[in-house]
Length: 380
Length: 202
View: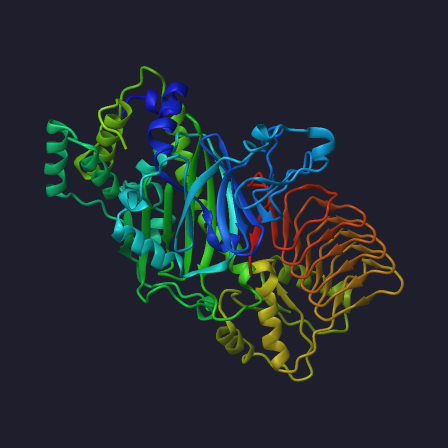
């Protein structure tokens, strides 16, 4: 892709309109939203979003009070009614103001204006424990984006998550696309993660001659229509068993406290286009959920959640386990962040484009599809 | 003294100033080894009539140390607290089992110190403060008056806790600086992360 795709503000804004607004985007974990009034807030491509539990039902709204544009929920997560702290406006499950203190005395809105004071609502879907929203007023069916097989494996695996979650944020100085390219590059762990990840599971890049033929045909013939564009989009997401965990397979005492997801010593990997990655490096005893949120052309907010599989029963050291998981993964994440920030720093408007090898056929396919989308040759 | 790491060496090195009449034996164990390995290592030591001090550095929110304490407790070994003779301990303070109060530490009057607490050399704990079980106060840390440090919490080098501040259970503050507001339970403040990291759910 041209360097502008990674550094240019106008490109970034076009990307938001053409790619992110039509797509379903991960927004958070359902286990963090289980009780009435539980909420999470995120800023997706500059759009502030709140997901709030109303007596068991999740609703997503733009997190801006229609009165004076103050964010209604200000924390990243918590349990609090959907009430603006600035002038006390309270909103109901439809996003309508249920109570405006001193409304009659001080505001005196005409009925027509009063009726327009709804929060902007976004479509929301849950796949197991994963909450997705769509910023488009006419969202495509989520099945059209992810496909039935991916939805099934995401639902099944995420329902194994425990309700105790640790979450951290990395303020990364690179374009979000560098992450998805990195995650679909199975050759880099051999070098970049030689002392960390690649010591516990050996990742090997493979060639797929059939896929390369398909890629060549796509480059020559283009993507004929929206149906084909969506079929390709579905092929960008998937996951499950990836590579076996190297012997000897580590076995921690806390494994005994958990209901394992499946029973195999495999490194599990789920890649959900465009910006969600889930991995289990412990063979189904724990999960790392990475959400890469574009903030600017050269800035990505990486929100990373760590959960174990469900507890058999509460145990004293569960918080310590989550903390250890986070600390243990931190080194691998920083290796990735470090190299991606290096790449970002090298990019300038006249920089040459990347030269992908045949083993990078997945990234090459996404690149072709993405460029067609950005150039208006296809629509979602 | 049973354990590993800095606390093991600190306790052994400070032995002469604790009670010269006591005979010191040290048993180094692998803190990752697990109960079976620890039990096997303890089989090589004569424990009849002995007291023990469990010295495992802050890790796994101090649960590793507690597991080893449990192994020794099951063998009926008493684990009295160890207080450096150079530490100052004010009036009316009860210090529970297996605590360590290091060289030059100051514990002002009216404090409550739970079991398995470690207070490192030179640390200062203000009057009326409560340090709950298995908390770890690193060397040189200052905790203000009437503060509360939760169970299994850890305060790292250079941390200063203000007067009356409550640090919740199972929290780690490992970023030098002053903490003047309460810290919720299961909060992690690390120098390497910009924002506090919080555990949600149960």
